[in-house]
Length: 420
Image (tube, rainbow, N blue to C red; front, side, top):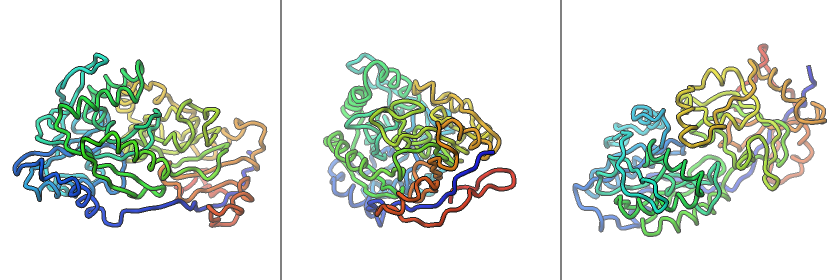
């Protein structure tokens, strides 16, 4: 049995703007667009709701519903999440309900269907799919979080424009668009499809959500349809600055309690772990550089979807038992990322995993290994760090050391508690 390093806890100090009153921010932002000039009493408004675990998303959707009801409109919610939820209407409704987005709470119907209409063909020659219920609405409000994408790079990545094709395109659209991205590029396909959708599908506006490094709502911005692309580019720049990060650039082993689609599209955010371009290692100019990743379980909210598990080297046997193979395969095959569902090496206990991982990091002896332990890639305010970081941490102004050096808290079975 190897000798383990001692550990200590740090708190990271991030810039942390925060929206104090969610409902008031949504109402004031939408009011700023003077949407009453476009909406007549009795008209319907489809409001999108995606599969990501966005902070306060139930409150944001509820506030948007109430705004349109005050205008005399008839809003309803449509799940906009490609192939997630097993590619079924019931599965997608279940994901929304898990976030608190219910008909009772929001005060309007949820219209869940996998049926789409074909709006037109793109210049590249493939069909543009659009959710049938949304297509029948008089107006569509696109709601989504703007942030860096886990796979693609561009001036527009994950956000409102992507929601218009992958989300509102449902399973059929997501399949087509991900295939097209392999032949062209992510920015080209996003723009090509989103522009057709904005021209033909009654897009009224967008409601962009940005989060700070503590997984809190940092900004809510209503965006008119005519300025959507330009504003999303600006918001992505801000979102990059507010993204959380690991406290150190080089890591031998990264222990992660949980992964899931509610955490990131890739289960673990590649912008955090440094594997956006290459599986199992960082690109030459990419940081952090993490040699080995261990994930201990799936979130309940991911409903067995382990897409992205192929990014990691080690996992618990418990995680493998939590995987819904059908749902995971549907998601990975739809995205064209077959490697995302390939399985890592598994062991029954955390101690066995660490024992197996330590000899794979190079010539560094176990007591000197650089190990970080986090809950997930969204919650990085506090991190458990091995002794190799001790001197550096005490000298940095952006870190607060919260504990003395101590042993890993294994239980009698050889497992660690949740990182809390």
